[in-house]
Length: 220
Image (cartoon, one colour):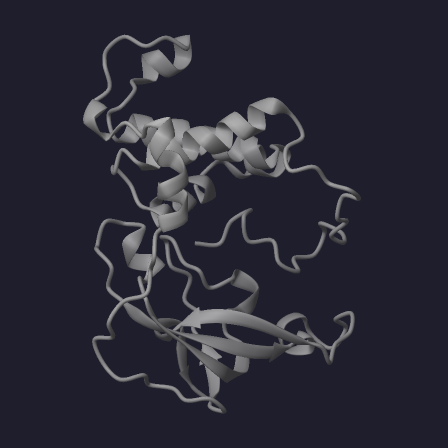
């Protein structure tokens, strides 16, 4: 889906202005929001891609006005309610009315470092040979999926060139919606800035690299 999370190059939002000397967290609660999000993932109700999609589905007016960790925390609340860990009333009151559904999945503080080191590998065995090779000219699909996708809206319907093959990985478009891994080949695709944003693009001859899954691509 294309939403406020997919700003890349859209008109009207002005240039990106990185914050000078940006801290890791702007307030202590932001660190807790990150910790809660990672810890709640250990419950096993949802995948990383479902959590991304939950953030994408927040109302645009909220998304564009909220801070980064406002978005994370609000999406986490929605996920916990969707999967029955909290009720709407508990959310509204800020009270806990019953035990959690999966107390055995509690992530102990002593296990955090090992879990973070292990991460969540997404590389998988391929189901078929790669359709594209380095040097192939490709066009990205232009149909707007109603669900989650990792193809940026500004790169839809554009012509680029395969510059690397990244291997086979969990396909986020399926994984976000409970359809399993459905592993797909992943490619690095190079586009010119002018192809993505038109001849008036700043530094129009610059290359922009995007990692794109095979279902996003067809031969030029």
